[in-house]
Structure formats: structure tokens, C-alpha cells
Length: 313
Image: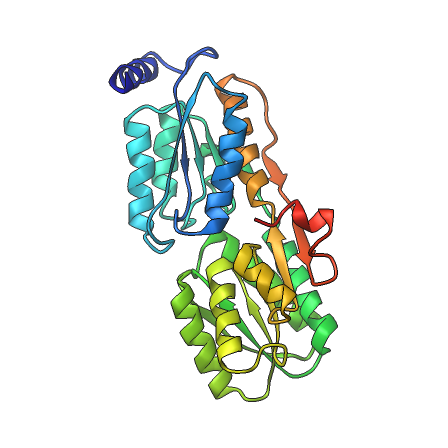
């Protein structure tokens, strides 16, 4: 049956665009499958598939966010097997452009989520759904300044240099700090989205900077590693830390005071809207080019309230 569907899809490409009634595979390709953030994106995508039951969905991603070549291969393979549409969270703004262009050339609609592609690639995809990462980074910086004031030393624990979300998020954070305080920034340090790497880097930063007042952990695995290092060093609650994303580990760090706040994206909404948007494109319906999926600043004071529960996972 799968071979039949693939054959039909390949035939459809050969004759031009998919018809509105053409059933087929929607390929969701994320940065890594080994993260609860992306697993929550998957939950949102699966929920949305209930309303587009004429299609099937595949969900995949590399073992690590830094495995960019693996992700490129996944997109190319999806194009080669003639999928009906693609929802993609690109790990690198430049490396994924040729594969996305290939999808465009094959008239496969593509929705980009979470991280932008390089300037000039806008023509190859139809919609971009993401957190306004610059605004999210600014919110993190404001939350930190509110806690520690405008003087002293802080560290930035980042993830993959050059990733679209990282550029906006860490850029927004550092610009806000520079423009609104006299705080000295140590870093950024890049964990490659590996929790153990972030833990070791944070341990080293704490040891080398006994006067550190604050820290920012810019994504889920980085923030978890940062939180664990703070606890191991006996600095939890002493060094004010702001994390990013909202899995169970990070929620516990907020509740016990290891983290003063977490900036949480609408990851479920990203998956849900991604499927809804690509389904509209397959049916030749118009969609918005850019959609902000939003963030919530979660603290001990609001973690049990509806606005936080709607985004935590």
C-alpha cells in the first residue's frame, strides 16, 4: 500500500502540482527527535492530523541538532519519495536551502517552523511559523535585569551557533542587556544542544567567575544542563538563572528556585499550526507568510495558572 501511495505521488509530481483531493504523506522533519520540545511539537502535529485524515504523517529528525547533514538528507529523501507537503524546522539557515529549493521545484508545499532560513530563501517556502525569538530573548533579558539589576557579570549559555532561532534569541537577549544595563556578558558558550556539554560548560563558567550574578540558558537541553550544574555547585538560587523552554525538568527547577523563570514557546501550537497550514497549502488555500506562535514567561508565581499550563509540557 505504501509503495502504491508513493507511486501515485511520484506520478502526480510528473504531471504537475498535487490536486486538492490528492491524498499523500505529510513529512514533519524537526531538528532532533531526542528532545521533549520536539516531541511536544509532534503531539501538536498528531492532534491536527485528526482533521486531515485523508493524509498520513511521518515524523523524523536527526539524533542531534548538530547533525545537519542528516537533516538535509531527510528533506531530500522526502522530496524524492514525492510527499504531499513538508513541515520543516531547519537546524541550519544555509545548509537546508538547496533541499527546500528542491521541494519548491517539485511543487511540494513547505512550511518552515521555529528557525528561519537564510535571506533570499523566502520564495521557496510558503509560510514561516515561529516564536518571535528576538522578542523572546528580550523578555529573558528583562526578566534577568528585574532580578539582579543593571550592574555585574552574567553568562550566556547558548546552543548551536548560527541556527536561525539562536541568532534571534541570543541576539535579542544580548542587545537588550547592552542597551539597558551595564552588565558584563561572559560567553556565549555553545552546547550544541547537548545537556552534558552545557552542564560541563556551566560548571567551568561558575568556577572561573565567582562573582557571576546571572545566567541565561537559551534552549531546553542547555537550560537543563545549566540548572543541574548550578545545583551541583551549590549555586542554585544564588546565581539568578533564566532558562528557555518548558519541559518537566525545567518546571521543577522553577518550583525549587534553581531557575528564576523560563521563557516557554508554544511548541504544541507549532506542530498543530504546521500541519493545519501545510494541509491548506495542499488544498490550494491561502495562508499567512509569517505567524508568531508566542511565548510565556513562567515563574514560581504563575506556573500553576492557565497561561502557563497551556504551554508547559
